[in-house]
Length: 142
Image 1 (cartoon, rainbow, N blue to C red):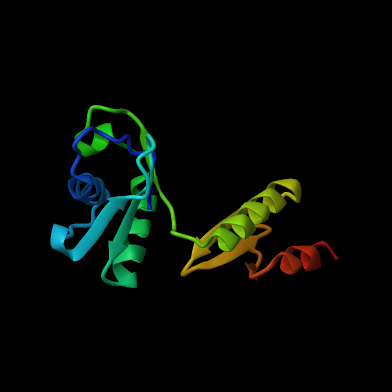
Image 2: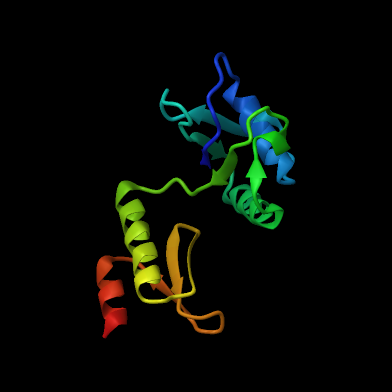
């Protein structure tokens, strides 16, 4: 999902997503993905459906390498920073939010999602823990 991209009247969401993805360094033909807004509210996320997981991972990797990406960087007039997020189920979103809170409350170094799994790491050199349920966070406290 592409987050924080302002809605324009009569926008072509496919073109908006294409420009943003192209800016981070992944060149896709517009017929290789489908992009649509998930609601009509301002700054509603753009859901990008891709043909394969490798393309998704490539986009996320390139976005990370690119650093902050603004709409202006992608040829638009707005200066909003756009974000790329995984499309998670409600349950997984809630678990990810709890894991991020746990990270801050317990001085962990990083939390991330890869291939639909939530990972948590205490330090740069410590092993990563896969967080599948809230019980996993409780076990780390013991």
